[in-house]
Structures are given as C-alpha cells and as structure tokens.
Length: 186
Image (cartoon, rainbow, N blue to C red; front, side, top):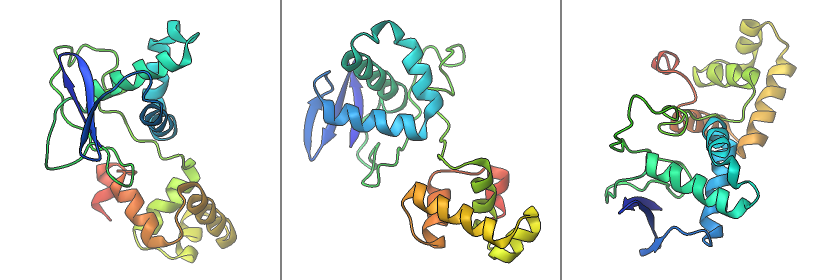
C-alpha cells in the first residue's frame, strides 16, 4: 500500500486503485491501528493522547490517528517502494515538515521507534541467536539454563508467528530490532 498527502488530505493506492482515506475506510484504519498498537506503541499512545477529546467517537479518533501518522511518515508518493509491503512492514519516508525539530511528536509519531513485542530477556536471547551462538553458549553468557533459553526462543517464535532461527534473524534485521552498534556484529 502506498500513502501520500495531497492538499492536506491522505490518499492511498491499493490494488492499483486510488482512494481518499476517510473515516469509513474501516479495513485500512483497523489494520493500521493494529500495527501501530502492536509495533509502535509510543506513537499509538502519543496519537491517542493527542486526539483524546475524540474518544467519545472511537471511529473518528482512529481515523484522525491514522491520518496524522500517514502525514508524518508516508506523505510523499513514490513508485519504487511501497509504504507498507506485503508482509505489513512499514517503510518510512523523510517527509518535509515545517515543525521538524520543534514538534513534540517528533521521534514518537514521526520516525517512530519499532517495538517488537518481545520482552527484554527475549531480545537479549534473540541478539545472541543472531550473532550465531548456540543455546548452550547463550545459556552460559546469560547465566541461565539451556531450558530457559529454549523457552525464550519458543515464546519469541509464538509472539512473532515464526518457526525457525532463520526467520527470527530475518525478522530482527528487517525491523531494526537492535541498535546499529549491536547490528554491526551480526
């Protein structure tokens, strides 16, 4: 799906058709709200707080939240890459904004940080898996039993709906789960 802003309205292209984002586009809005709340909870919370006065009309509130998120992150139309790909991954754009540097939503809503739904322990284990460590090596490094490490891996797979180390590594890389410093050693 490709979003863009034209005359302060959000438009999107889906299945080679162009639509104006409106309050009644519930399928698109629901999908965006689900993704925001799961993977960008700080952005979701900031938008929910910003549009708190609309909480009596949840449909309108969610529409406003999605429209603002799109304006901040997907405002330009481009043909070489989709804003949201088939795997529901977001590809943010550097949208020109007159409030850049002074807006209190910058780095919350604009350029939000991905949050993987993994616990800190699961993230530590995932990082070591990505670095090529065996379960035994991870257990020794983290002063845990191998069973605990296997449980962390199992829960990570369930949460992410994956089933292999390769998929875990791919997920971590695609979603920039680790800092640049941590990624350099992958």
